[in-house]
Image (cartoon, rainbow, N blue to C red; front, side, top):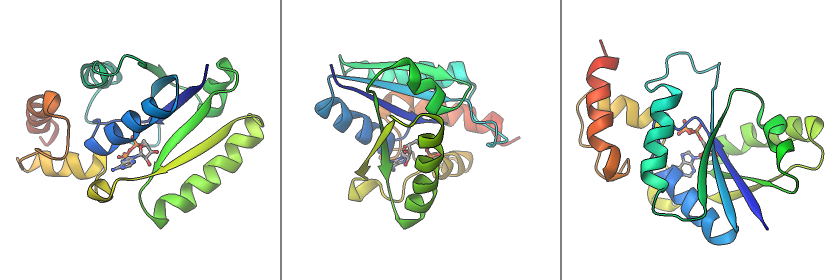
Length: 163
Ligand code: ADP
């Protein structure tokens, strides 16, 4: 059985993330969306539990997608699943440099771990969670940025988050 791990902070999940998850679910038998507790991102908008709930709500439509969390390194997490492949989205050249370096580090920790990159859909190349947080904090319309199921939740949270 082929298995993909789609890691990220998903703070919050965007339509760009969802596009990568959906395409992974078409290629692999099973996909685990792994929400990483990223200590370098100082002020998260959503708690890990809130992110899990939101991602679950959105990926419920895909029968072969599961949600998990990790507060460790991705390369360590992936050791639990023999033969799993990490799938990431590639938006621009700036993503490439970071991802290339991360991939080399991951290989040192877990030499058998492969990472595959799916090029971002053209309409989402500009989209990131930080763009969504910024827009939400100004009360902007989030249609076309985040899945419709979570729009209200993101808007509500943004009101509190900005204070
Ligand atoms: P962000 O950069 O939005 O904060 P994450 O750290 O949660 O996102 O990223 C998780 C993964 O999703 C990364 O592989 C990232 O490249 C990918 N990703 C994020 N936004 C998009 C997008 N708009 N299109 C394609 N892939 C994306």
